[in-house]
Image (tube, rainbow, N blue to C red):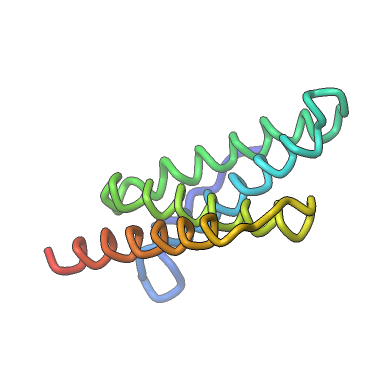
Length: 121
């Protein structure tokens, strides 16, 4: 099945941030499957790790055509870390101490700062 690359939206708008969103969602799915694979002992989540990360990297690469790599990677990594932390807390009963919450807030501030610094230039 061929990969369909959509570069502009219905109204001619740039789709780079949509591709970045896809990259983030599939990275989160891949990372969650890492936990579910229980060290590659469960076949389906083990296979899905590679499927989801493949889709994530393809989407991320397309997003980089229009988004600065420093900003895109900060958004990708920052949102990925934040979402995986929430999935860990709610889905896998992992602890969420105050230091982790503060650290996640600092990541969010950094991502916003990088994004705003790009908008100014």
